[in-house]
Picture: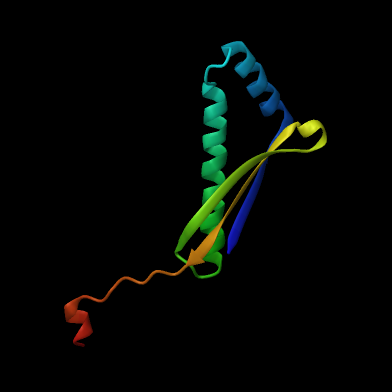
Length: 97
C-alpha cells in the first residue's frame, strides 16, 4: 500500500470560492485546473513511492479531497493505492533458452 497527501493553501481556496460565487453556479476553470494539478501531483507521488519499494505499477487507486485546517481554509488531497510489480511475459524464443 502506498499513499500521498497534499494540502492546497488558503489563498487558492479563497480564490476558488470567489470565482465560484462570481460564476453563479457555473464551473470555475481555475478551480478545475488547480484540482487537476493537485490530482496529478499526488498520483506522481504514488508512482514514486511505488518505485521506492520496487513496484512498477499502482492499482486500486483512491483519491479523496476534504476541507482541512482552522475554519476549513485549506483543501487536503489524499491518495492511496496498492503497489505491485508487473513482469512482462517471456516471448516463445526466450522460453526455450
